[in-house]
Image 1 (spheres, rainbow, N blue to C red):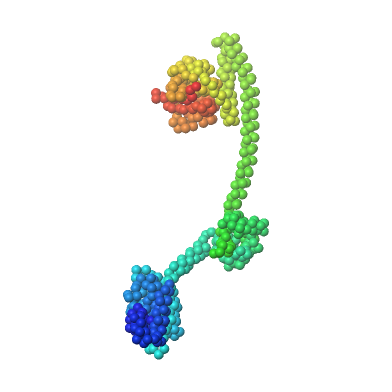
Image 2: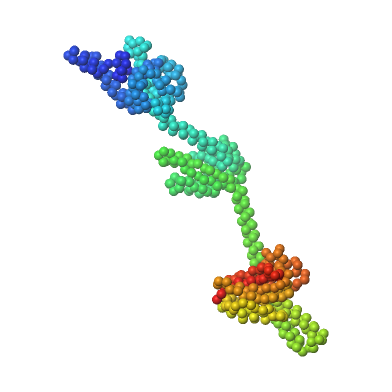
Length: 523
C-alpha cells in the first residue's frame, strides 16, 4: 500500500501504463492486478476523513490525501517533496522529535499529539498515529511512514477549558471566605474548605469522610433536611436555603444559614450536593437582643400610655373642678365691683381678685385645649362663617382698649366658629402680652384662600427663637422673666388652624413688630 505514489514522483505508476500492459500482453498479469489493487487502496485512503500522509523517515512527503489538504490548506502538489516538520511547523505536545524517531525505529509505530500550523496561519492540534512500512528486500531509503492525523483542536480546547474551570473552582472553593462543602448523596463530606471547617472549630482533614446527619447536624433538624433534599431529587427546586445547627468541636451548637444545590451527571441523575454555609450566630444573638428590647419597650409603652391616660384624666378632672368655683369667683367679683366705691381699698382688692381669676381661667382653657390636641380629640366641624362678624366677636372677647380695627373686605370662610374665635383671641392676647397690643387686623383674598393678618408694632420675635415659635411650652428667654404665660397659646393656634385645613405663619413686620397670618379656605 505504501508504495502507491499516484500524486507523482519517482517510481509512480500511471493508470495509462496499466492499460497499455493489458493490451500488449493480451491477458491480466499479476503486475496489472497489483496496480489495480493499489489504485483501489489509494482511492479508499483519499476518502478517509482525516489527514493521511505517506512520508520518508526524514519527513519528506510522498503522498497527501484530500483530508490533509482540507486540514492544512496545502494541496498535494504544494506538499509533495517537502518535509512535514518544516511545512507544518510541528510542535510536539508529547515528547519530542527524537522520541518520535526512536519509537518509529524501535517499535515501528508512534502515537502522540502534535501542534501544526496551517496555510492560513491557524494552529491545529492533531492526534497523530504513525506506522513504519519496510518493503521486503528494500533498502533503508525505501522505508516509508504512514501518518494519520486526526484534528482534535476542539477536544483540546474543551480539555483546556475544563482544566481552567477546575482550577478556578478549586481556587474559589479553597480560598473563599464563605464556608463551602461538597456532600455525597449518602451524607459523607467529600470536601470542605477552611472557612467551613473554621465555623465549627475543626480542620478540613477531620471533616472529610464524616457523616453530616450523623456527626454534625442537630438531631431535631435532620428530618427537615431530608425533606428539603427530597425536593431537590424530585426537581421541585434547583436549590434551597435554610437555617440549621451544627455541632462545634467544643460541643456547643452553631447557627448557620446554608444554601444547598444538587449537582446532576450528564444523564440527569443526582451526583452530589454543594453546600454554602454562613455563620449567623452573631445575627441570632442580635435578633434575640432586639426581641428582648422590643418586649421591654412594649411594656414601657404600655406603662407610659397608662400614665398618660391617668394624666389626662387628672387634668380633665382638675379642669372641671377648677372651672366651676372659678366661674363663681369671676361672677361674684363682677357683682362686688359694682357695689363698692371705686376709690376704696375694697375696690382695689376686688379688681385684683377679678384679674387673677381671669388669668387662671385663661390658663385652664389653654391646658384643656392642649390636652384635647395631644389626646387626638380635636374635631373640627367646619361650616361657613361670615368673617367680619367673627373677627368683631373675637376682638370683643379679647377686650382691651382701644379696640383693634379690622380692615379689608368681608368674606365667608370654612371654619369651626369656636376655633376661629379662640385663635383670634389667642393672637390678640399674645400681642397684648409681648408687643403692647395688636395694631390692626387685615383681611386679604388670594385665589381660593383668605388671609387674616394680625399686626403689632412690638419688639418682634427674636430670630433664633422663630423656628420654635409654634412649639408647645416654649417661650423666648427674653420674655420668660418679665411676661407671664404658659407657652401654649401659639401651639394651640397652629393646631386649630391645621385641624380646619388651614395654616398659621409668622413674619417680621417691615416697620418693626410682627405679622401673624391665618390662612383659611373660602366657603
